[in-house]
Length: 137
Image (tube, rainbow, N blue to C red):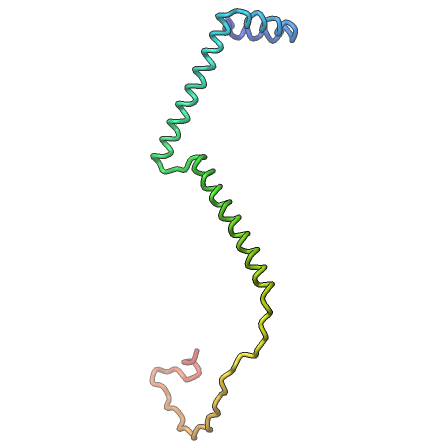
């Protein structure tokens, strides 16, 4: 046996648009029905508000930022970004108004010439079996 809700929904669907509008007018003309719909919508809105407050409190306890926190931070970042753009514009104007600095070659210290090294005695071979060539790596 089919449930009554399914049969009523099926009946409403099969009625067509014209009959559906007639049915809706009859239902909404009944004061008890409009009061029930109004009460249901009011309760649903109140429940949604409570759920939103509870979720916000839970997120605050967990340290997770809410959408309001995100929007507040976003507005601050946008304000800082605007300030940076203004500073960059002012800096560009200041740099453009200055004379370009004269290019000067950097001063290099003069290298002193060393005297040719005296003849050195050859180095003694190492005891560890490596030659000088291997040791320099």
